[in-house]
Image: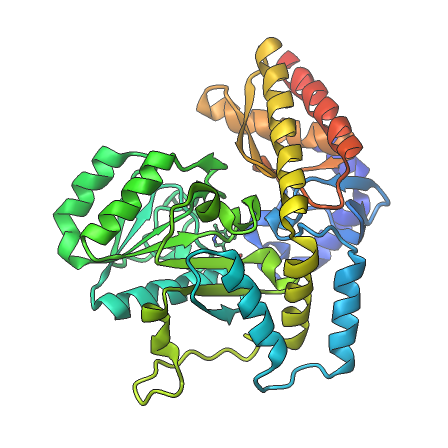
Length: 417
Ligand code: PMP
């Protein structure tokens, strides 16, 4: 499968070769690399991507969940063009910044006050430092297979990154607990309770394989954080799309702080962190003791405008419910086929966020998943090589039906080998 992939894509191979002259590994996002060389995409429209050799793929990655709008949403385009007419970077406070903040605070039960940044990574770093400053403590609880951003994985952060030779981790004051394991988490937290300033958790592991957090586990974290006076932070960078107010609203578990990113910038670089007024007011510039937090592009007019129109007109309750129902249908349909045909795959996730896993023993599992990925590419479907499947509004019910058939057929081909 890999050699037919290489033969089918000579232009990408050549472009990749040239890119490696100046970029180590030919790119700047390790997560999107494909062996033996990645496809170079020239154009995106709706839910379709066209590569340099002219192949067209239906995009079921949606840029690792951030591309929820598809490649060409007219409302976002119009908002960007209008903002552009008022000037690129203004370097000043703006009403569009306050408007996006008001929309986010109205959506997420935990957000009294919010601040913007340029990535989910930054949002998490800022939420951690804010919590530690607030509690005057040093230790942050994180979870195995959690992922909170690329720079953070360079610290001792559990992480979808495995801590092996591929990770550039340095020790830090993190306490890594097992996800969805209340007993062991409790044992570890109780040992360090007085030093713990924050508990940072994804309501569903994203990069760690779309593994939903058990409701009891998340409720336990809420309880223990209150008990030991630590700040509970929900990283909803991915799960924010599960309802208008993320998974916290669905489960009615309200953290002290929340981090956001990806699609709330309307397709531009974005991060946000916020929470209780008590905590966030440390940034109030009117106070002589205000904590400083800068960032040239924190309130970029294009991002603010695109994010606001998205929050108001696209990420509506009905639209999100429909998208997530479509994702649930997708997952149920393929799992039913995997089971009834005894195929060595399963899909986990919630709503429009899903992940295919190969259930063969571990060495074969990664080969099985890679093979499935190549088989789907040949059929014109683009998923993440590591198995992530994330829907966008540009994907129709018919697209998903076609995709389900292609996944089942590909899984059967893999199982035969
Ligand atoms: N948190 C989670 C849960 C994520 O999935 C990601 C990105 N995949 C991040 C944080 C980091 O966001 P960014 O890539 O914008 O830095």
